[in-house]
Structure formats: structure tokens, C-alpha cells
Length: 193
Image 1 (tube, rainbow, N blue to C red):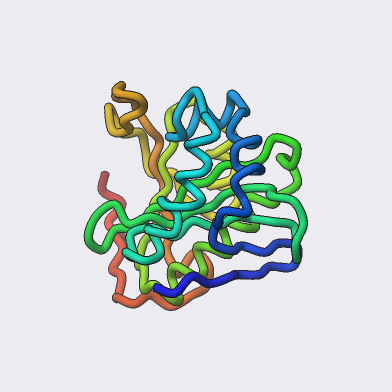
Image 2: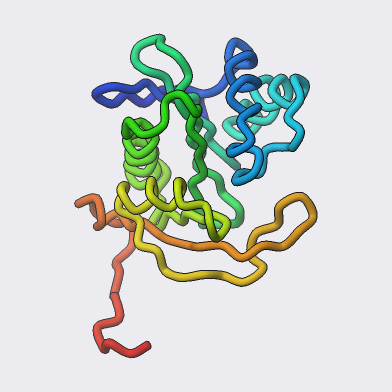
């Protein structure tokens, strides 16, 4: 897929590139990002260089993941990272982190919603999953503000640095955003568990 840019009222979401290396490196020095995400720890300059110069562009080329640098529009500072990934055929998952200095202003939620709308309307996603290690309350708050429904806890479902951890899982459907689905959806109405 050809890389593209998304815009919201306050933000510009564009593919990561080499010019983002310094800001990605600086953001990922945050112990919270290293603790709660899958970025390497310790996070070295080479990790940032490889991510912005190789991994992120390869995801777009191979249509396996779409990583966006989230900036205050039009060319402001990096405030977050949002990515839509395809962990398997027909599966779509969203992940994100926020730059510490820009947390608490709704930027990540706004970016997640923009990426979700794009995934539903342009990629044909019929379900977008969010996962976070149990205890990552910041990620859960963003997901819930964006409309994700937390569906439960999965045991040993998140592999972080060769350790299996329990994770929360939630989902967003096109109908949650008032969008049509690419496939019909017949929800359980029986009330059965």
C-alpha cells in the first residue's frame, strides 16, 4: 500500500520516516513506554533508526502494518505513535504510545479514532482489537475513550521480552463509530454467557 497521511482537527498522522529518528529515540527513553509496550529495553539509537528507516516503511510495503507518527498539525512535535497491524489473515490490531510531555490532552484518543476509521473504511477491517498488559491503565483509558469495549482478560496471551503476561483485550466495530461493516454482523441477543 502506498503510504498516506490522515488529518484530524488538531493532528497529522503520517508514516514514520528517517526524519523522525531523534524524536522517536527521545520518546522511547520513557520508562513507561519501555515497560508497557513492546519496544526494546533499553531503547538505543539503533532501535529508532531501524524502526523509522526499515521496519515502519516495510510494514506499508508489505501491507503487514501501518505505523503513523502523530504530530500536532501541520508540522508540530511528535505527540504519539499509532499503528494498525495485521497479526494474521483478516485480523487487525491497534497499538499506540504517547510522548510523556503530551499525555492527558486527548491526542492519542483522537489519533486512535482516526486510524480506526481509516482501517474500517479503507482496509475493510470488520473488527479492530486492542490488547494491553493487565495494569496498563493509561492504554486502557485511551481505548475506552475511543469506544473500544473491553471484552476480558486473556491469560498468558502477551509475550514481552520472553515472558508471557496476561492482557486485557477489547474491540471496536465499525458500527461503534456509526460506520457500515464490510460483513453483516449478527450479535448474540440471547443474553447467554
